Every structure is written in structure tokens, then in C-alpha cells.
Length: 201
Length: 145
Image 1: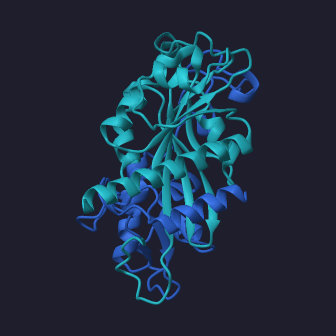
Image 2: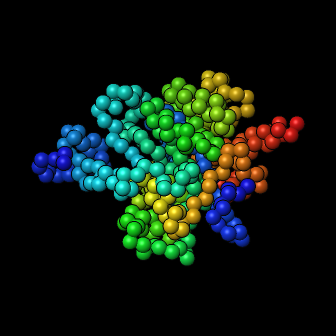
Image 3: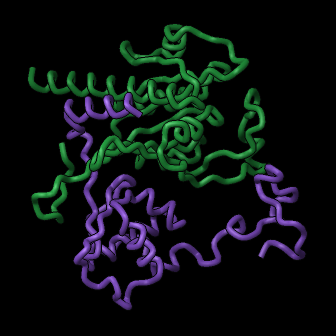
């Protein structure tokens, strides 16, 4: 379905842009994932984590991360001329939640990145997307040194709705990131079809 | 101004942190020299009423657009026009490439729409998310990356 484009006289095919959000706790690898799959250098507004911020942000288990994304970063994947996917990393801290609503508006779906060492960090993101019925997948970023957990264990620990996919990934790897996005788009398609069937039946 | 003397500039790349927060910020790190909304004449909302440019709304330059040399357009307007010249750009990309806050870019885009320089696509409403054919195309495109 093409977006409305009332200002353009008919004839030319309208460009379509789709939005996918990448959410999750502080330091879980959102920016890394966006950068791994984006065809443009990830564009971002990043601010140094202040010393005051350091007290707020619990960086236990998150080594050597001295900055945190406080606005948004994003990448682009061109599927073909006139069809692009935009990825937005959501702000990792609660005080930037006001930015989420705008980002979530019209989103195709979301990736919730999780770190099994700090699984609770992704609870707010899971809650957010569940409440707004935005399709999401949970991608467990398998950090070196982190214990591996089976996807079904993560699903149970997060009390996910049945059907919500959980995938293991390495946010640094392009192939792995691609796989996460494919799972999300497939799932969003299934959810969309189910909604259509519901509205008919 | 946040500095009194001029030692070797420190950046996040060399230090990870300014060693004395508040005393070592140079150039872009010291923040903009012009307050962001000064370039919009203090306006925080686009002049075009009832529109909200989504981050992924696509901005297309009208090649036959009148008024690109309009003296009423500021340098930031022209920057946006130049960024759109090679290809259609999203609002988010324009903000990043022009190094302006998204709110400021929205106001400037409102001016450009009003003058007929650019068209801005409306985002897809959530209820009209793309059909299966498009989603299949996206999946195939991702696999082919």
C-alpha cells in the first residue's frame, strides 16, 4: 500500500519507506546492530555519558562503554528504488521515553535486543510494544562470555505472548542482523494477516 | 565559552571522556554557536498547519520549483534543498546531514512546502501497513543483501 502523496500528480510510483525500531536496555548493542545492517554510515546523535549519568546508568557487566545514545541513531536499507527500510535505535534510557511514541508511530515492527546477563533491562521495551500491539521479536545478543540460554527459556523468563519469536544473534554480524530483520518482517506479516482475518470474520 | 586556555584538544576518540568535564569542549562538542531555533526565527512549528512530518516522511525536490533563489530562504533552507537534489531524503537523514535538530528541520521543511520547493510524503498510517506482496519483497531484498 502506497502512502498518500497528494502533492504529486499521478503517474509516478510513490516511494515507500518502512520503519523498524531497535529497542533494548543501555549498552545492549542497538547502535551496533543498526550499523551492522545499514548501507549508510549510522547517523546518530550521541552524547558523552556524564559522570552524573554514570551513577544513574548501571554499567555492571557492560564493559568499556563510555557513551550512550541519548537521541536516536538510524540506518537505511534500500530494498529497491522506491522501497526503503529505516532502522531507528530507540533511546536507551527511561528519561527519553517521550521520543518513543513518535518513533513507534507507523512502525512496521520492532527488534528488542536482550542481554541474558541483564534480561530485566528489556522489560520496559517488551511491555511498550505489547501494549501498543506493535509486532516485535526478541533478539538475544550473544555477548562473548555470556552464558547461552535457549530461546524458549528467554521466552518464558520474559513471559512473552505465544508466537513472539526469540532469536539468538550477534549484533556485530551483518548476516545475523539480517536474519533478525527477516524474522521480524515475517512475523509482522503473520500478525497483519491475522488482524485482517479477524476484521473479516 | 567553556575554555580558558588552549591545551591539546581532546576528543572522545582519544580519551573516552573529557578529563575535566566542562573545560575541554571544542568545536562541535562545545555545542552550536547559533541557538537551534534562531534559524527558524524562533518558530517551533511548521507554518503549514495540520501537518506533522514523520521521521521517515520522504522529501522530494520539485525540479521545476519556483523560488529556490528566493532571498527569503536562509542558508539552512538551501542546505536542505541541496541535500534533496541528488535523491529523495527522509526527514531523519536531512536532520543528520544538515546537523540540525529534527524540530528545526520540520519548521524549515514547512517553509519549503509552502513555497512549492519540495513535496513531503505522508507516512503510512499503522492501519494501512504494507500488503503481503511488499513484505515478501522486503524479505527477499534482505536475503539478497
